Length: 180
Image (cartoon, rainbow, N blue to C red):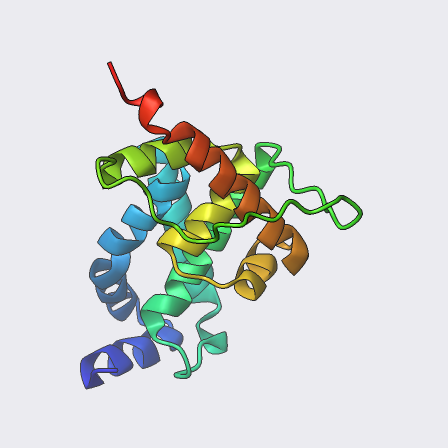
């Protein structure tokens, strides 16, 4: 961590508004981009991002140097987005007692003719519970224990949602779906 960032964090912890504004300016663009991954409406994404910054500033005392400040803030932003989605009736039902479907091919390789944008568009078409797990795993790089903690679901449910999301993605991205 740079000395300047460290000083901004220390001063922000003390309630220094100028330091908080500088921290906001440093991280707001990246955090807005993350919010937009989860929330379609830009105004809603902006509101949620600002709520996340408020939570971060109120909880700066819990921040430790073990993680980068950006990672710590990113987790708050993602959790705030998920909270917003849950208020919109996100269905995260535990599936511990259901039979798991296991994919034989467990990689994320797609046809080379499919663009990154087509994959992202297909992810957006997934059921919300699958979309969240796929985004957290594939885009944000979280593992299943972190996803389970963020979404407040069992690890087994995270794995199952990822598998099912991957199957739906494969169906959505079949070459026949893109031929004209």
